[in-house]
Image 1 (cartoon, rainbow, N blue to C red):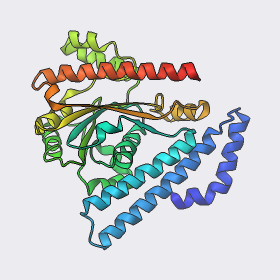
Image 2 (image 1 turned 180 degrees about the vertical axis):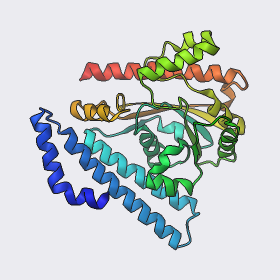
Image 3 (image 1 turned 90 degrees about the horizontal axis):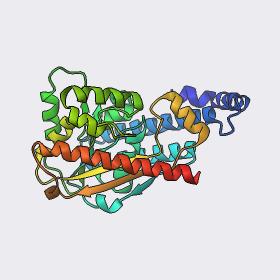
Image 4 (image 1 turned 90 degrees about the vertical axis):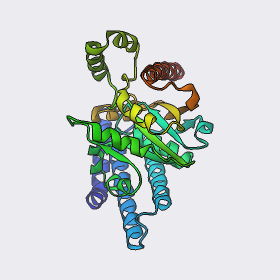
Length: 312
């Protein structure tokens, strides 16, 4: 892909720029997107060659070295994305990531917001994140190689018995060091209005009260507590960090990405808040605590988007 896309770039980029111009898209979204795609391919190649070099040198199990590679990979991709979209990422609440030993509970809105979290946590805060990701992401070459050399769990979502998956999450959250955090996207999938309506319908079948409470959500999906509960149960010393972001709304599909490239996007902001473990209830009360944090984050996202629209 890298060889083909780079070789064809002198022809494909001008051709797509002409298509954009004919359609009246002054920001040239198709041309920007293919340039970012070529950039992504080169970052993947460099990452794979680096991983190969580590293996040849007998350092395939060197966690620090692989986390440095991950930090570079996330930073390079965010630079390319920020250039394509015309915005630079921001991390708010860096002081809440001054140390590890925490579980990061993050919203999920697009195909790329996991990259924003990696840039914030690994590249900017210099922590060592352990991710809970869907298994389909192993199609990404660097995630398939480097992501399996450092502690991560690629979740099989379509299973009848999730006991083994939950135990893997508990193992992931045990024995965290001072620079280690676990990151989970508690909603389980990217948020959009259709998915939100379906999620609320399923919740209403089991708990009408919770469905009524979570129907106030405008941007986030109701969290699925099972994975978060497993992580929290693993170690009573780990703090909790709630994380929300803006800048990726509507970018959960290819059409949404093109639309964002056409019209521009709000600033990429990743905002974190740390919760001391003593303030977090255990047992059945944790699910209610998680819902309350999600409602708070939804309000913050709504306020940030309104401010962005007012200033546009």
